[in-house]
Image (cartoon, rainbow, N blue to C red):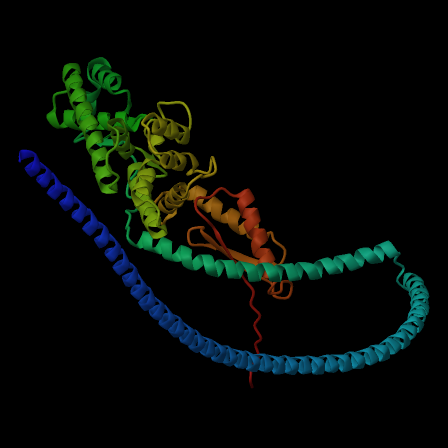
Length: 530
């Protein structure tokens, strides 16, 4: 029974497995068939879609092809029109070029024919010129022969050789040329004078008008006034001990003579002379005169003079407005107060030069303060020139170099008397200011004898020139007026006369400043109506 049941179960299982296998196999074939049918349907649908796409693409291709053909035809039509237009323009250009070439050919033909005609004319002219050349050569030979004959006749008639006649002609030509040269010189001098005079006049007048200098009022004081002649004996002292003490301590010579109420102080050193003068005045005023008192007063006066020198130097530097200066130079500037040149106080002259040089520099756009400094120090060597060997120019240059003054100042000191040529504009301005200060009227004194001799020499030189009728020295010898004979000297020769007088004056006379030569030629016609 158990076996039957087991077999039955096994049979059922086997049957189930067989049914399952058959069902699976049947399902497999049915699914495959369904899939094949689905694929066939999908293929048919895809084929229809592809055919439709092909048809659409073919239609689109036809449309694009038609549009492209239409556009291409349009472009070809436009290009054809452009090409035809270009061809027409080129044809027109070619035609115009052909016309121009034809015109040029015609012009060249005409020119060629003209050149041919000119060549023929030139050949004719050349032949004529050859003939004229031959004629001129013949005439030239004839003229030369005629000139030789005339020269021989002139020599026979005049009695002069060819060399003598040439010399005579050259002299006449020289005179004519001298006249022309004088006229040219006059014209150029007038032109230059007019140009320079205006500038110089403006600059100098601006500088001078701003300064009013003092005239020479006194020279170095060498006389001491005493109240009575009895004081002379007290100054001399017993056995001359007082006068010897004064002379020994001051380094001066006292001259006590018959001059009433005066004692003369003699010394080459102006500072010593000033110390002696002040000492005598103080001793005379005090009344106590003996060697001990003399020594005390002299030392006191020496200290006062030394202080006065420094104060005057500082005051001069302040007036000049040149800034700081080395203390030793300040002292030397103050010493210039006790020096004179032709009666002109050297310190006052230096201040004038400083001021004028500064104004000239300002007018020309140069350094005004530097010009003032150079002007104040230009005569600094005169402060010690009686103590040191050498000229005041050399001494001044050494002092300026010692105290490290600017090179323009050193140059101005070295060149203000034209010992060396100036190297800067400042030096030239200082030299001009120095001349202005020393040569202005009233600046310096001169002896009557020298003054008279200079005037006589000036008139004598002027009268010695050929053609001069009379001459007059005027303006204190700074100008000479020359009157010439109008029958011997013409207008142009007056320039030669003025130049000749100027050259002789420069060569023969020594004079300060400048001398103006004025030549006057005047012709007067006088008649009397009756």
